[in-house]
Length: 337
Image (spheres, rainbow, N blue to C red):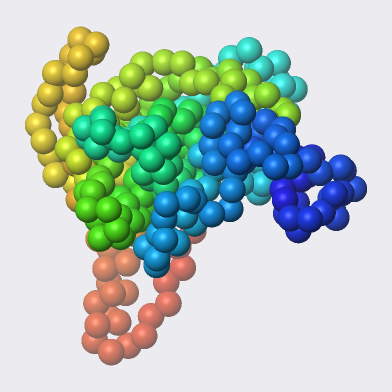
């Protein structure tokens, strides 16, 4: 049983937390609502509370049952960092809104309306929840934050509330991870139920204004506001099932680290100017910043002809079989205006 106070995982029969001593109560893992000891479903959100999912059996059924994890959760190790970020923002007086540069990711289940139209609502939830869980696991793996659960999809942020310099890359890695996990899960579901499942993902890099987090449950007061969210949503809606679409801003940051296919310029609803759209093909050939910088073109030395000649001379001697050691010292001159 998870302690609501400190996040420690206690045995199911425990009455008090072994880590902080707080009294433990049974809670819905999806929404955090207190539930009775014999309840089978949450009275607030309707999520099944039993350990086993009725109507599913066999190897693939066990796999699906394990995936029916909470669709609203933040892992404890991320929660601690998020609350630390919240405290810092509060100290700056930014709890009512702070400008952030982030990467927004939208993901949803393709064609879910047609898939579940003939299903009982509980059966539909059993089909959708594992997919959403796969999405969230991929986001959390790269330390992103799931802002909203959108029925059959999610909105996630990278770069806020946990700051990362490489948040655009993390979002793309997470998208690839969730697509790969979805392919494995879909194979099992297809064998078990004969239903094909696919997801689509849209990503955009830009600025938003974010509101504060409620300290006690980390729920969705941390809402991002801005055009960035709108464009990311449009990228997702334009993506074909099983694909990942990104905008030009995300492409420029990730070019080289990932392989892309240009889809040309597209008029996006709600955006005045047409946008360049790219489809992610997979991991690129380059790994480090230096490799990417060299691929894009390194800045040329200016006024260093003599130094470059010495380097070329040393290289020529080394190629003739005589080892050379060259020391390079750089100076940074600050210009005060």
